[in-house]
Length: 414
Image (cartoon, rainbow, N blue to C red; front, side, top):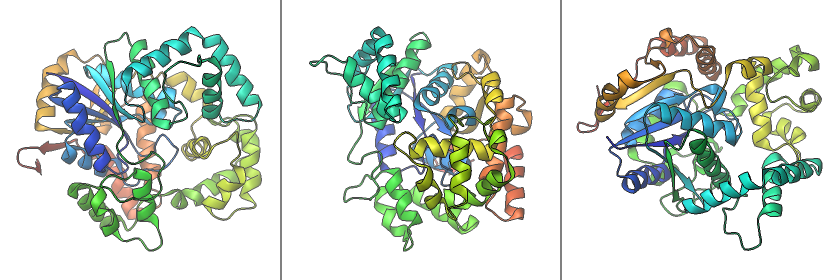
């Protein structure tokens, strides 16, 4: 069966994602769509709006056939590790292609850019370091280095755009895995990655949708034109059941506790805590009483909000540098955590199950790898803002819940 893969967060699933999914199937002729989805915390260092199970339901009702979890160790990461972890999982599941949205929309430009940066790696790395010494963030330093090594008439991709950066990493990962997966791209429609408003069309960014949901005068009806009815219903049910969506404000008290009770030396052992960043965190703590004020004190030209938020997630999760470097290799996944499947997805899984090289985990109690344990811990930390009884229920669900089964023909969960 022709199978394509998407790397997603669905925070939440919206009309732009629906377009991406539909166009990906059309472009590849795929019968099966596999979504590798971040779990409780996301690539930009943010808590997911809802738990991963609600987002899995959105994905299945939106047309995905298999939804598997991108392990926490690869999900809350810079573009290179995030992309490699996801593409490697797709490779293990037999996907023939990975389709990503980009501002450019031309895969040949991605391939040309990838070739150029490999040919001029030494030069590129030199200019990246030069940019970092000037106080640039790593993404900006990379964009600067690219501008220095690319010939004047070179028609590559614009690496100042976040989706193009990720797209380039998907191409690199596919190449490193031996070319078994073909990277493809489609042009993103209407809304930009960081757009904070809803706009007037039918497609808005997930950032704009979340900003609307968290606004003081939030009206759920405002997002209705920008999401499928299934997403709207899932969000409404989640809000009614839990009382809130998740944002950094909910986790700031736990972050403060960590910063108060641990020394700078102890904090320095955490993943993503580099260049004395722990001292900036502790200093800012005494001047801020809410999350936005806190991050405004530590954000600089060198340290972007995304970079800092990732460090804060790893602080909440107590992710140690030594642990990460010992256990995590994004190109060599150790397990596949299945979150949900359509009827067609279930048939596909049955057809490849005997060929799988790594365990397929459908029940958390059977997951034993240290990275899997971290995924369970991430789900528990994600539920911390809730009352104790809800928190306990979430943890029990994480261990006992089996993957969703969805009938596309009947439009029902089985």
